[in-house]
Length: 202
Image (cartoon, rainbow, N blue to C red; front, top):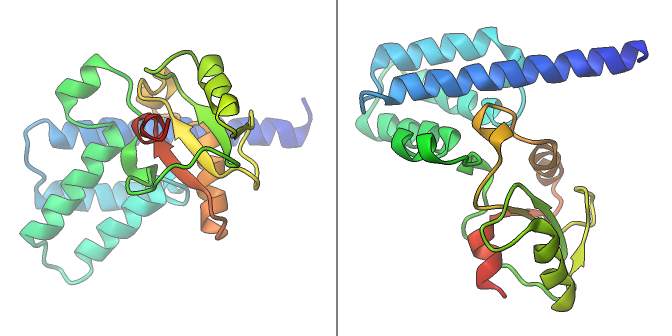
């Protein structure tokens, strides 16, 4: 392994550790059902000190929101409720739900997107309720769509399996989703959708 490969691996490990710690913090804050001012300030300081996660998705989205909330020195009930919702999406829903299954964070999903299969390029990630991933790919091909094993600039939809992934539960958000977020930020017309949205188009 050369120097750059070692550096890349070290960065990925640090990112995954930081993501896992962030999910743990979010779970701790949500356990009593109330997000207080001290917890919000702690989250701001923690993200400020951990740029391995605060400068990349999803930490950068969360950090920007926390800074915006604290900017005027007043935390309104609406701001508190919105941040609570963001943290719930980060950990994949309520703690009771999370304990029973492996959910991907919903912060990435384009929930209002309409999926069209013919002539669209799909990349699947995670585990699917509908069927095995290979069978899901066959269904797409049979309906005139295309399948890519990786996220490229030609992909139209990244479909997230409803069963998520064990890795996501423990803080690794997956390279496919990270790449999709990167392309979306470059202005590419790529959409990240849940399995349910994809299945509704069949």
